[in-house]
Image 1 (cartoon, rainbow, N blue to C red):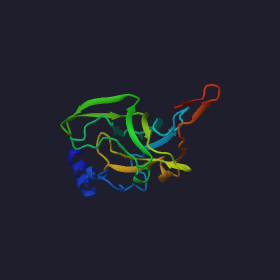
Image 2: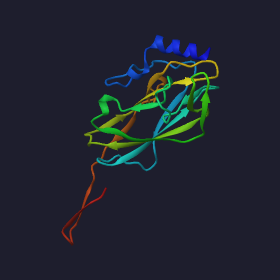
Image 3: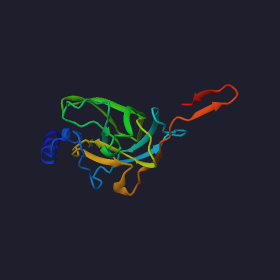
Image 4: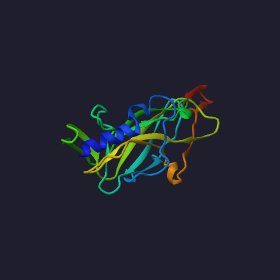
Length: 196
């Protein structure tokens, strides 16, 4: 029953693979029955600098008995793993270098989908390492697009995409100022050193 319902929803809502196929994805404008909440913060002591990396933390809170499919899961089994995308407006400044997950990852064979799934049933964090590509003249409103799917024991929600921080619940993008590597001159030696 779960399989038939899930595939019916996928057919009605369109194939999820086209969500990040370039351009702007279709963003969800309200929370679903699963009410998964994503909140973003800049990791402590992070200073975005050109040519360097910084880390942001996305805290994921699944609702009730719903689980979120992991970014580590393959996208070949008909279920949608969590994916992140830099919005087209920010691609000149940032790129995703690495995605890590904390928390208790539940890996098991799901007979409904005849595949091994990887999911989080309790709150966890996604640590995203971002590479800075160029300097900004002012403050950059930083956010990411997050695409994911949730299921419980009886049904699956169609995959959805949100801007995180979640503007749909009134959160605002992070305000990021990108610095250039600074140059220190030691007058006594006449040598320039770059701090990175």
